[in-house]
Image 1 (tube, rainbow, N blue to C red):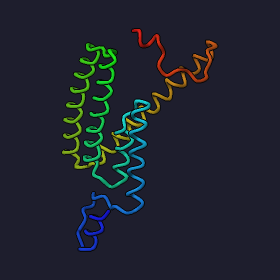
Image 2: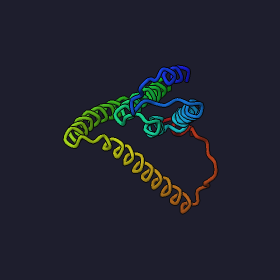
Image 3: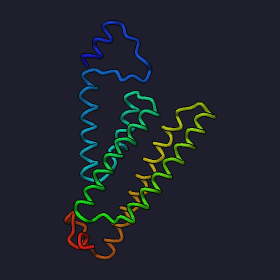
Image 4: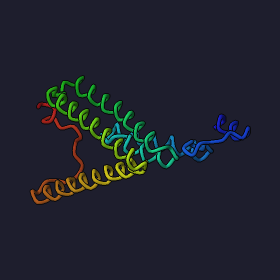
Length: 172
């Protein structure tokens, strides 16, 4: 905030995608990021999914927001993979297939989006893609969760709280 105040005092000309720091943004943005990191660690969601739209709200360019989110997700997944490896639960052949699939998908996606953006000259495509990914994953996981819940009810299973880590899952 001090550097931002000094820039304002000397008449610094801000770019349209520069973040404007004030007491509200200096408090709200880090709190939301901390909450996103907590959720990412506790529930396995990608913190970048929360931070990406937040960075767009802060006024960052869509390309910067998307790249920064992807970079943050890299560390989240690396930490999770290391955790599985330390506990001996990492299935290397699955991890290798998922890694290669993710890498090829990312490269293809980057190439296609870059070509479309060059043709159209619009950055809004990145925002639309982020919204579609978040919306479709929310709908899909909500649907799967609802179906699992209904299936459990029909089977007469207790729908109360359960242990997060069951012994049977660790024996695999």
